[in-house]
Image (cartoon, rainbow, N blue to C red):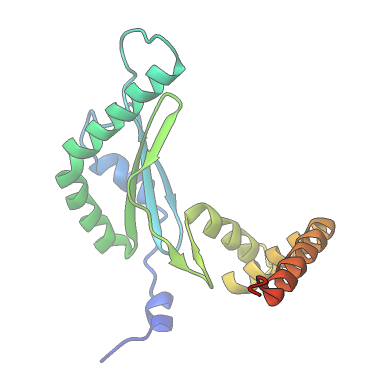
Length: 181
């Protein structure tokens, strides 16, 4: 028997214990503490802090390059094990798992999901919509997105009017076309 999206959605596995599960499941030494685990309906994002760099750096750019290099090394060295852990978590929680690492002022997400909601949104944007739904401002993500667009429209009237006027001028020029005579 085929199950539709609505039925699968209603069977969403709870993920209240995801942070604890990842804290217990991850190998010792990967991160300096428990990772930050953020969960929504489609995705679990796991971001951990890497051990600090040793040594001095000539400037902020050099430090940022070293941080990015260390994060890239972590990503490559842990890839196979992260995939295995993600598969276990995806089976347990019925959500995709994305990974990231933070070192100093540098944070990188390795792979994240874009979920369709009339457009593709990443987890931070989906969390805004989910907050509006949870607060009762909207009944669905689509309605929350429409609400947010209306709110922006109300508070950006002057800018939007100028943008529309500029677009009208572009349309007029496009209709006129070049003088080829």
